[in-house]
Length: 214
Image (cartoon, rainbow, N blue to C red; front, side, top):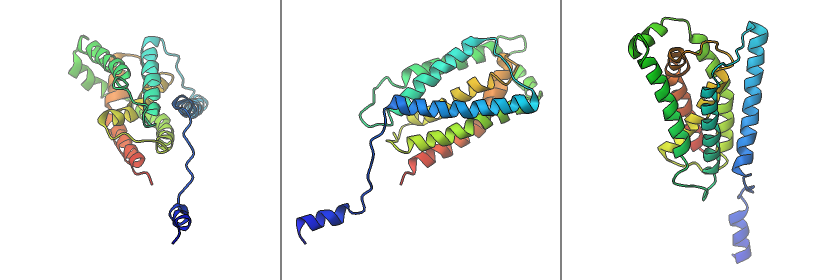
């Protein structure tokens, strides 16, 4: 077999691969599609339930928005080989840990303490918050899976954590426009701890889907 014929045989089944767009462009597209779905769900909630809320404490949303932007840029940047930096994961994880610590300390230094406050809050009806968070998260998670499967999947815990953190921060901002209860106890109980196992399961299987690229 001639060299030209051998090359033709070896390359005839190869698929044409188009280069990925810039990380900022891909992250912006994902964000816009996610915002559209969240806005549609919020609008549906207003029409059906007449329920919406304007957050009073914007500091929390500003911190979460910083986490969202930093994590999204890092995640999509590291989705392209050769774009890594050793300090990529530091900034958004530091802010996220500080945000969690603030919630826990706020509840811990309340009159009833951490565990008594959480156990009492669990007796209240906060399941609608869990349902809403899951509702506004599922489509962004599917879209994130679609976008990341096109690039390099980094097999590290920090990358997997970022796949979790990005839609988490997005959903926390979204629920603030739905739930009128802005107390630290309610946010820690119903916006975080109550749906953490379910959301972790979704994120785990989403990451498995991302890893199983053809």
